[in-house]
Length: 290
Image (cartoon, rainbow, N blue to C red):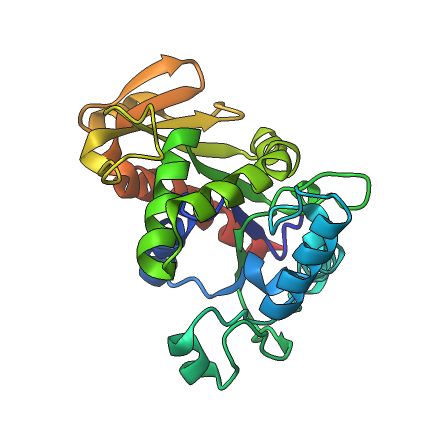
């Protein structure tokens, strides 16, 4: 970890709400006058869209039906670790953008499914913000968790995650329920071995739990709303967390364990503002003192 050049890492699977967390942090940065540089996990995929499709076909022909973007070897985790380390030491680094759709293609001048060229970070940033699938990976090759100063996990319970993916892929990408189900099954091994272990490395986890019936996510007609959900917030080290203050500020919240707070789903943004604002200010203040 670096006192001079802090790194905030947000890890969560697609649809878990990591983009919402980024918007919350952007509000904190803007309000507190903090200059950040951001990188997305998509930028560190190993393959563009066409190459990934070809690699999937090759793997399946060889009998491997578990390969997906969740897999460690589908991503340039060594490069991501190098960026984390370089930033922590010098405040410099580089990133690129994975172009998802025609709108992004128009903005970047790069076809959908391709990457932009690598570009250096702007100078004189206060911190680095990562959002993606692999921000806290620890394996035999990399240790990203050791390089991040504040690690945040964002994950819905599994049935809710499946509902969100099914609805998004059917409505936005035109996939059938059967095709999405096949993708979910293919990703399960990597989800268990590559994604879940990271949430033991994170400092704070946010897990959305629906309070409506999601027992069969493959026939659910709609995604549970925030008002139909609770959020469990788990602090790895609760020392210094003012739980009475948080409960007084977040109506309807309560503690379930000495390190766990439960809040109404609609209060997640407020909770993040209350929890992360002082943490970010402290990281930046300590960085400027060194």
